[in-house]
Figure: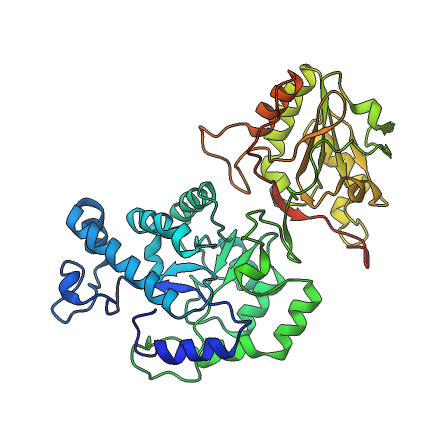
Length: 441
């Protein structure tokens, strides 16, 4: 909150901690504006502070053009104040998640390129995970559906958002046991956990029921570090997890991974000879079609695969009927992930009525030859088995794509099969990282 009284001290501390990922916490409620109150008269009360009735303020920002202009000016002023600190902007969110308001989010998107916005919070908190950590009645979150829609909007703008966010239900009460429980039950993907640590309560603006010291103890616990290391979880800011500057969305060491878009197109398809769940052994020539081939790396347990498998099978059937061969390969280390064993592969293929071979890459040599990174990870080849497509299935991730979403793999492979140029804009697939054997990742 760049307009808060302790901003200067916070900036000085951040400069002494260069590895600290610092974001902009936009404030449009429960705070003072950066601009003079006279410049934003419809956003503030008689004390010169933002109004606390977010419903009324939000309605005014949406329906009244002059109020919207004031909001846009204030948001820009907060971005400019952050930039003046010289700190690198890791992410953006807002006090009380006000950035989910469509007019506020539109303003952020309009300023994104100018101020280097890399990531924005979309607060989707899965209740099932909370229930695994601590038995309690499930809570309805008004943010869930809106967060999903806004996350899709961010994705279309090329801005990252976490798959999951924890901190809503336990806001101000992220105790050591709860934080440790979340680490133990982290879902696949990129997760943001937010807290409100402080050495003590009683400071100006402190929430009366927040357990600040307990949250600080949770974050600084040596046991937490050990748990994170034992789980193989990569921690840090958004810039630590994803290479946003190259806009490739490649995970560095996290459980979420993104297909590499820097693999050279026109690469010849590496050959293989792998056993399949139908009892046969297949080489590349056995799965290639007269007009091309798609090789996709998947597994059985990944939520990204489970979310798309129905659409993947449907599009594979169409492509195979049109002369494009199709095969899926599982390369995960089944000793660490038993759900990806060959026996489970057979069950997965039967359950989803695979019309294509499901191959087992036990040595992981085929995945390495192709440069596969995640599940699902698509490689589309032309009739000469030259790589032409390294994009995604469609814009769906762990939730269905919009009703009008393009079937990107299907469209691309149909064009390639017809001899047309490969699509110039290929967006990489996002999924769970391939589970490499120990010492070989």
